Each structure stands twice: as C-alpha cells, then as structure tokens.
Image (cartoon, rainbow, N blue to C red; front, side, top):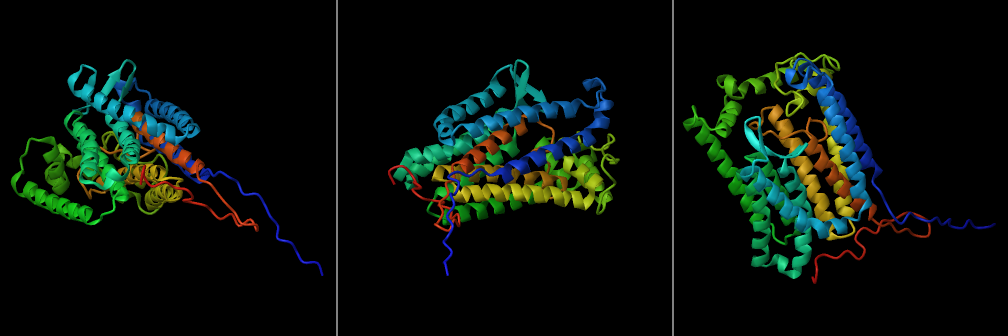
Amino acid sequence: MKQKKNKTRRVRPEYFDYSLLACVIILIFFGLVMLYSASAYEAANDAGVKYDGMYYFRHQLQSDIIAFILCLIVIFFDYHMTLKLSPFFYLLSLLLMAMVKFTPMGVEAYGAKRWLSLGPVSFQPSELAKVAIIIFLPYLMMMMGRNLHTRRGIVTLIVVSVLPALEAYVFTENLSTAVIIALIALVMIFLASRKTKPFVILLIVAAALIVLFLVYVNVNLTNSSDFRMRRVLSWLQPENNMNTGGYQVLQGLYAIGSGGIFGKGLGNSTQKLATIPEAQNDMIFAIICEELGLFGALLVLILFAYLLYRIIVIAMNAPDLSGTLIAAGVFTHVALQVTLNICVVLNVIPTTGVTLPFISYGGTSVLFLMVEMGLVLNISKNIRFSGDVAGNGVRSYHENKPEVKNA
C-alpha cells in the first residue's frame, strides 16, 4: 500500500487583523445611526445650526470619512517610521496646548477653553497629546537602552509623561484628559519596567487619596463655587444639585431605567427630546440603553470587548518591544475612555466630559482614535508567520525580537 505523503502548503509571510478593522467599522456605522437618533430632534429645533436635523450626523460622517482615510495612510507607512517622527509630534502637542492658553487662537466652548482654531479647522490639541505620548515613550525607551532601568532613566520617563498631562490640565483646563495621558504613560512604563512594587504602592496611595478627597468634599464643600467641586457634589448628591449637573445625571439614569430589556425602539427615546442636554455627546450611551435596552447596551460592550481583545492579541504578538508598547498604549486609551464614559452615565464616577469612542459626536476624538487604530493595524501587518511541513501555521511571535537598544 502506498503511504500518504504529508501535504505541504505555503504559509502567508504576513498577517493583517481584518477582525479589528471590521470591528472598528461596525462601531463607526453603529455610532452614526445612534448619533442621528440622539441629535435629530435637538438639531431640528436649534437656531444655531439653522434648524437642520442632519447637522450633527453630516458633520460626524465627514469626520469619519477623513479619519478612515487617515487610518489607511497610517496603515500604509511602517510604524517604525512613525516612531522616528514621534519627538516632533510630542513637541508639537506641547506647543499647541500652550497656544490654547496664551494665544487668541484658543477657543472657549461649554465653559472651558480647550479648542484651538486654525482658520476653518478647530480641534483639541490634548487629543494629539494622547497619540504623541503613545508613540514617543516607546521611541524614548529604545533610545535609552540599558539606561532605561536606572534612576536617571526613570526620572526622564516620568518628566516626559507628566509634562503633557500637566499642560492638558493647566493650559486646556481638561482634568480628565490629563488623567488619561498620565495613566497611559503609567501602563506603558509598567510594562517596560522590571519592578512591580513601586506601581502597587502608587496605586494604593492614589486610592487612599481619592477616598480622603471624596470624604472632604462631601463634608466641607456643600456650597463650593469651583465647577470641578460642583461636579463631585452633583455625583454624590444629584437630587440636591439639580442646577449644577445633577439634572443631567438623573435624566440619564431615567433613560437607562426606562429602556428595559429590549428598549423602546430605535428613534423612540423621550429623554433626548431636550431633556438630556447634548445627548449626542457624553450621554449617548444613555440613549442607547433607552432605545435598545439592556440588549443594545450589552451589544456595545461586547463590541468594545472584542476590539480590546484584538488589540491585546496584536500587542502580545508584535514583532518588537516598541510595537508591543504602542498597542498597549492604544489599548489603555480606548479602555479608559469606554470605562470612564459608561461609569459617568451610570453615575459611578463624577462627570468627566470623556466621549464614548467611535460613537459620541466629536471630529477630533474620532480622528486621533482612527490614527491609533491605524498604528495597531500596521503593527499587525508586521507580524510574521512560520509553519511546519504539515502546514500547521505555527506563529513565530517573538523571533529576533529586540528588547531595548544595546540591551
């Protein structure tokens, strides 16, 4: 009898995560549908947008198209080239945030001066700072080599991380973005560090300070005039602070509670009818819960969970340490924004002004998020495969993977 020969087949030398790309596209289209549902009534009755019910939808669609094109451009260029340009983007983000504070180009909206107007274009420079820190820290770590784990190296990383966070807080009056930038940097430094104990101590101290701060606010600042303190009080006592933020929180909770299991139906929300101010922005998750119910909310959470899972897979299989750190930074950014936004809507934490990625209205947010997705997809494109003679397709995840320069 003739023995069957093992069949050999050629394994693809490159990989591209189409699952991640598909998940992003689904979130964008879902976001457009929910954005139109949440904003059509308010836009149709708003003289500021000339009673145009399609105003927010049309502007978001334009931003999504530009963002997707930019994402494709980032996918085309090797992420190592982006790393070389990272010092420029880092310094540019610092300069632009300073321009918000010290030049007439800074624009105030919704009680805060966070936008920069450059002719017909208006955007938030703090969003650029998130991307800049994600790509600059890995570049700096590669350049530091063995000095990364010295005291001088750690101090350098801390200064580089704190500076954009401090500017975001002081120059653009954006505490939530400052916290996100700091946490992104902290996670990336933790992954590159050899020690765990300092980070555990830092988290314990931070948690203790937060608890003491909340107790102090609840006891001593009942009539505070600071808007951040009012937000905390509105979170702790929403019924007693209806005029300073508690109203929006309670209406959002009413919307979530009235949605039930399967919701009232797409477009049938009643809380969006001028009850929840700017429902298409930070509170859009409440409209999703009201119209699509618990089913719709879980669907959104599953999509984000799958998106984060794909980013983790790419981070674990990246061809080098810089790719791993970039993907980890993007994972941290998306995870933080999703968590903070949903926790605000559920009144778990005070109002932060953080948008729900790919779904909330905001051109600047989706633009830089798509740049980050392009970076992660570019990293996935550089993953190499190897296979045995039977064609089992065994991945060579970390083959020739350099840790740090001169290490």
